[in-house]
Amino acid sequence: MPKDAHEMSENEIRSRVLTLAFGGDERLFIAFYRKLQQGLPEGTGIVLRGSVVTNQRHEDGTPYDSLGKNTSDLDVTLVGSKAMELWKADAYYLPSLHTKPLGDKDPDIATPELNALRESVQELVGRPVNFQATSSLVLYSRDILFGEPYYVVVHTEADA
Image (cartoon, rainbow, N blue to C red; front, side, top):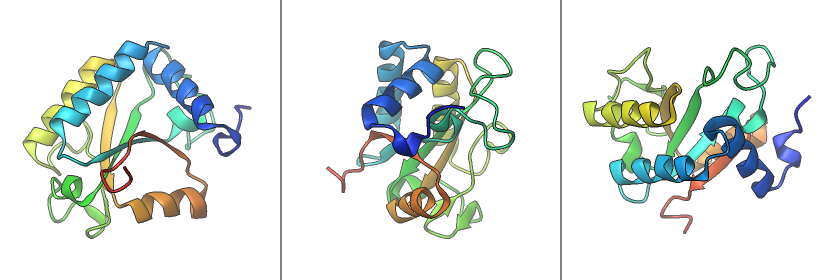
């Protein structure tokens, strides 16, 4: 059973993310978040959520990439109102607070430019990548109320 992310330090979570999603390649991780920063509105926070943080798939509890190398996805959450503006009006779970995921299954729910960025990052890391946008409040609430930990890659401008 993987160590609970809520019991890990930020450095331990970072190490887990780096190992699981990027094969321990620090340069790939840096290229990943720099590409995101360059393609997103200024001040957007970048957060990783899901099995890359917990090392457990939500659906069945199996470890990250248990179906083979690079089979697990990266759930990238974009934090901030400017990022949420990139989604279509009907692509929200909570209007103005939390979007539906942008991925290969539903690539038309956000701007073509955002989907192109997602596809570019997906190609860079060699695994499926999904984007979702949310407010800081929803991100925090999901962690505290529902036990869904996350790793902050880039803080929002408001957090700086």
